[in-house]
Length: 117
Image 1 (spheres, one colour):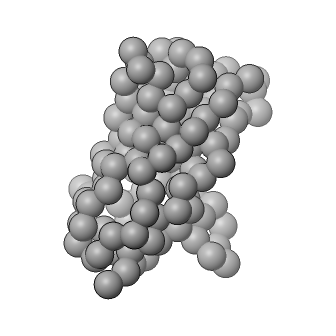
Image 2 (image 1 turned 90 degrees about the horizontal axis):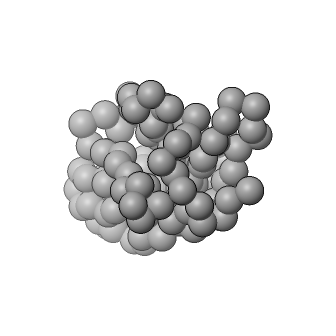
């Protein structure tokens, strides 16, 4: 079991930037997958960006070139740098980690990102 705490959300104008953080209560050095998802009102939760256990990354087409996922294993923390934000990026952003293929995975409580002028 792991506790995940997201932070860094807020209100930002279109074209602005934000960096989200996800602090884990245990080591994230070895994972099956870890990433960021988001859910906008009335929509399904969708993948934004994720690491795989072999170190590769996946990004949703809608955020490629604008968002960057990273992690600091020494701090047990994952980040999502978001730039050139658009109103369509408005959503609750969730951190997710799955340590083993047999695990169900763990979710954070979410952090709200609102892009509006």
